[in-house]
Length: 386
Image 1 (cartoon, rainbow, N blue to C red):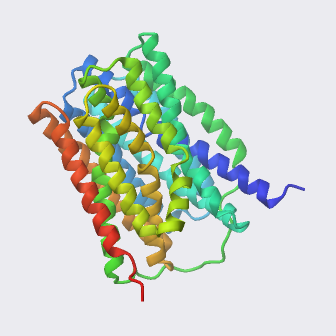
Image 2: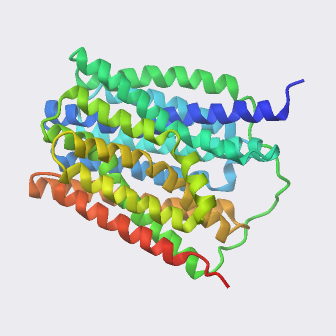
Image 3: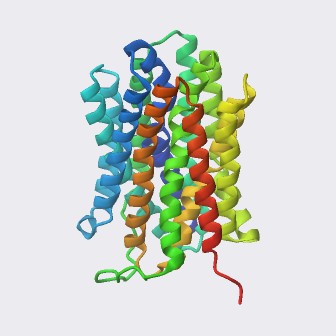
């Protein structure tokens, strides 16, 4: 007889692998591959920003679509479809060099990653909630950092072999295919029924909830500039190809335990203060990546980006769920829409600023400003003690 706890562990591990494939690789492998694409295909920073934003637009559309009731009972099928599509689309990126194709493929990849994110979360969280192991959420979210670290190791090997940018996409697809098989074998059913029926109520008209929604959009704008262009910043600063991969690996390794770490911090200092503190720490990293020369700035940027951005994503959703406990799917959709708008605007704005100014300094400072405001707004939204 298999114990419910071991089943919950199996699903948490499957969630980690799924997020590693769909998010860590599917969404973020673009960052370490981008400098090679810009160099070999003569893409401008604005072109690179449009490609990134197409992916984030796909994620927004996919997350909003996935929040609807039509998917009930099909969660496992849709999650595996998203995971398979993410694999195929990574391969297609390595088989074309046309800008229009890049935009379409990355839009569809964003859609696929959103399906994995939403449906895998509903499956994993239902199984870990059934045995009271909410702490296993940290393993699930750690998959994003794991995928980033794996893709960085892959790029380090490819650059030492002098492989072109297309090889990065094709090898990403090969690694993703292995992850797909693992997840398909581990996840043998959809989410456990929780007895809820009928539509969710409207969101409460709450000032704190509105603040959290706005702050989350500003965070989406603020984090995504460094998350998209960090390795391009290293390339522009004359760093070696291996050092580019090292910076991205630092971000991934720091991201892997970050949700667990920040959940512990949130228990001690409160959810809202933890969110704000993480934003302020990320500001240091975003600024350091462009303000401190040599290897120190990019390494600090990678470290502080990794140790904060996945956790802030989780903390923001957690705060919103606390303020709208009766409408978890609805608030997830609204928060994702706000976050999605921020991260769609971010790369385009940063690309144009970088093109106009000649480097990513101004774009990164604007992003840091958005993170400061996001943290301040969230801090002000904290419930006041009686």
